[in-house]
Amino acid sequence: MKGHRDESGMVLDIRNLSSPARSVGLNRFTNESVEAAASVSGGKLHKWIAGSFCLLCILQAALNVSLRLALPLQDSMNKEREEQKRQLDYIASQLNFLTKEREELKRKLEDFAHYAQQGWLYFNGSFYYISSITKTWQDSRDDCLQRGAVLAIISNTEEQEFIRLQQKVMWIGLTDRETEGVWKWVDETPLTASFWYSGEPNNFKHRNEDCVVINHYYDYENNWNDAACENLNFWLCEKDM
Ligand SMILES: [Ca+2]
Ligand SMILES: [Ca+2]
Ligand SMILES: [Ca+2]
Image 1 (tube, rainbow, N blue to C red):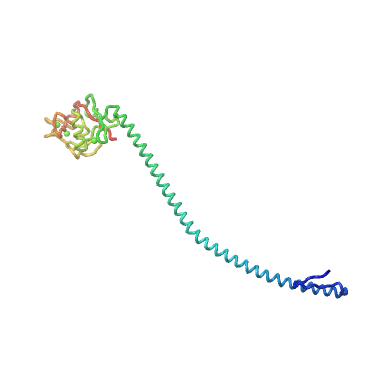
Image 2 (cartoon, rainbow, N blue to C red; image 1 turned 90 degrees about the vertical axis):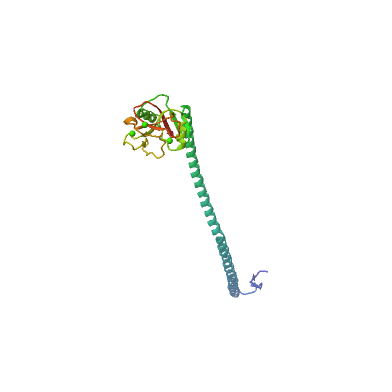
């Protein structure tokens, strides 16, 4: 059967209608069908828009929740990164410090080996060289300088005792050549702890005694003597390590 079916399922049979009537009928049927279809499509569109809007709201809510969860996490990760960087910087500085320490120790070890091989004696942070020949005080001082050292500077009782036990009459780095009676070490430091033998310094027999020897013949802890700088004596160099 030839006909048109409208939205409600009704069938319009146009075979028995005259041509104008058929045209009018068909147009009317078609316009109504379009209106009906538009009405139905409008409803669907509203539903679709409403549904989409709800979906957007849900997505927005989900996004908000995600951001709230993600921001503290990001903050925590940043802090962790900063802490890791701080720790890395600290390790790098420690490594740098230890490298310098190692180089310093290596240098000291090499110095230690060098001076020990040359026959220097080690005591409490210093190496000491005892000459095997005699010279004036000034020549002795110059010899020590050539060895990268100074005529010995005695700073305390322990050092005095160590030197005294070497059992030799030796120049040490103490003089009052600049100003009589004002004793100074060769590094320009003033005399603090002193170990003069009884009656010294004395410019013996009115001689000009401006340089100091440590004298083992005075078998006492205090055994310094001022002597004429032109005298010939052994000498003691000191290299502070
Ligand atoms: Ca010293
Ligand atoms: Ca003097
Ligand atoms: Ca004297």
